[in-house]
Image 1 (cartoon, rainbow, N blue to C red):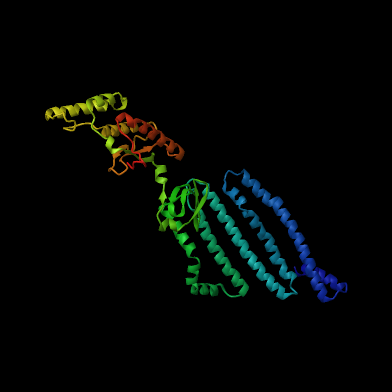
Image 2 (cartoon, helix red, strand yellow):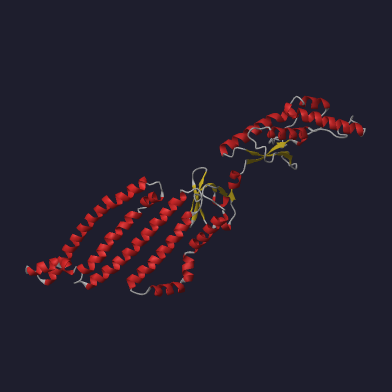
Amino acid sequence: MEEVTRYFYTLLVSKGVSDNIAEYLNVVIGILILLVALYILDRIIRKVILNLFKKYASKSKNTFDDYLVKNNVFDYLSHIIRLSIIIWILPELFIAFPTAESYLEILFDILVIVLTIWIVRSILRTFRDFLKSLPSFKDKPIDSYIQVFMIFAWSIGAIFIFSSITGKSIWTFLTALGAMSAVILLIFKDTILGFVASIQVAVNDTVRIGDWITMEKYGADGDVIEINLSSVKVQNFDKTITTIPTYHLTSQSFRNWRGMMDSGGRRIKRALLIKASSIKFLSEKEIDNLKKIELIQKYLNEAQEKIDSYNKENNVNKEVLMNGRNLSNMGVFRTYVEYYLENHPFINSEMTIMSRQLAPTAQGTPLEIYAFSNDKVWKNFENIVGDIFDHLLSAIPYFDLEVFELDYNNKK
């Protein structure tokens, strides 16, 4: 090998060129020839070997090799061949320049370390993309784990690089790192907290990619699009992006709507404010008028029969309407609301359906509707709720009830 690398030196000396000039010219010519050879080799590798790998990946049914090509794993592996040739030839080429040879040796040791980290990074990214394509891993915080592995890889690489530059053993740096552990913990506090939080989020299944979460402190109200080591990205419904530190998902409260999305319906919990002065007992004539409403006709017949039977048995004086048992317009309307919801095509009849009267307030007596729509899509849900309350607000006058409205002129 030495005869090849020093061929031009021997030739030039034989032609009468001085030793020093011949040494320099020999190195320059050798480097030029090496660069040309590496360029030709690079073209061969790219045109032949890498193209073969890419064609094989495109034809195979397995998607893993497609992600290998996408993340340039084969490209980085091909650099090993060229780098190996350089490391093999340069020491021989610079044999007359020991100082330069030692510096080049350090430089190429560093390049080997960096190339190794790049290859590791590409392989990890390949696994990340492949796992994200699987349904069972699609909503898991894989990016967090990849980032942790890369931090360890770069940390180890940095130790090897410093060891190569200084010429000291790796154990010397590990001992120094042990002494600086407190400082390191302080510097990487957020990273460590994020890593621990990512594990807790994954193990406890607190948040998945695609979940709808609400965190008022950060103004987040939308879908989780990314979970990594340091932050969670939430795309709000106005298409803005909110970034939340990952460890805050374990240290602070937030609302995850996944339970609602996985359930059989989306909850409706809204109240009508009924004017208290409009609530009254119903006379027989008013009950007969309400029997024209088909939805509660059967209920009114049965209820009136039981009430009349009770009042007769107890000799109740019905000259005063409030004596004995009676039907009220509020009670009948409350029953009508439940029957209406039970027969509504977009209300899940297998989940809770309830119309309840809440404690009276200065703004009237609340009649709360509690039910679940079987369509959970936000826009559709709001349309369903709107239709329900449009109907109920229109139905209230039929029961001689009034909705409370604040009169700013009379303050009542």
